[in-house]
Length: 458
Image (cartoon, rainbow, N blue to C red; front, side, top):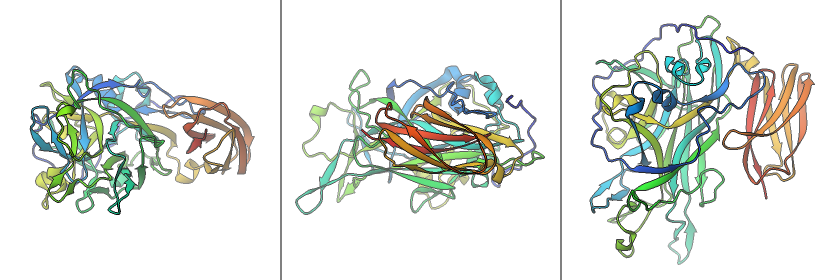
């Protein structure tokens, strides 16, 4: 089916407060990222049958093609639960963490998409779409696997990553009141729990060991970047919950038309015990580490900073990286109007999180009932070995395809089920050729797709 071409956007009603000035972050410390795994997200298409657009979106990919692209420098930074995790720099300077959560709002109508290799992915105001999958760069350093239980034994350390999803009116639209009058899109944080609030759904990912099925431990690289001052970066990918979708009005009047996600990390190790503060990063030679120094596990994100003098101007659309800073998340009064999260283009040295959204359009002005034509009711057993059963329901007569994707978006197996009438079905899926790991099973019926996770066992 032919992809939709760009249609002029309707005027959008702005949110309440405007923001007067940018935040000066020019002197914030930054850490190097020394190596990357291959990035499949700029051009990788999942090739779901019958879809208008089904592809990955990267705002950083858009910015890289813009006039500020040559000015981007990439770094990593770290997420802390209570801002007291200690950093010991290579010169002995001690400082503390400042970011508590991060994320991204996507505006798939942005003209900047026209700069990329996939200009046809720009959506019009008449496009309904759903968020299938998210991905982001990360590093997860696990220094400690167990701690004393107080009874003479040990207990395993369980770290946690919270992924929250937002859509529509859960995302507020604002604007800087001084030139370049950039658009801002924000979600809110609960300052008591230090977690996002007002979300559609939150997934809790428990990290009980270095081999956890979701996020691998990324060890430090003691190279020319210095001791514990340079990291290899990996990619994480998660299926979005069902229902993170925008159903466009048939007259194109939908203004709550954005989707977003955030992620937050909590270490299972107490940051402070008495007067002892756990050390996240020790950038000095490890041989100089004091005996008995208490370490903690930590989690970082990869982002790019606009280091040039040309600003990223986006006065029409709402693509926005999100950063929750301790200055805003702990303040009893909201400084400058922020409610926990600060927009990446609200910094003097603009910040762009390296994150990705996989979107699928499901029609022009169609309703939710039509959009949810297919639903996976179960995958059994799960984990599975050799054969897994996929049970699903179809609301309207359709051609059905079942496909399996690995965690970097590559199709590794597919089966055409043929034309079916409405009803419930079960399909045996032969998986003996797949290596042990986590996969995504997608059932496509006509123009709609539902995806669930499958664990293949040894």
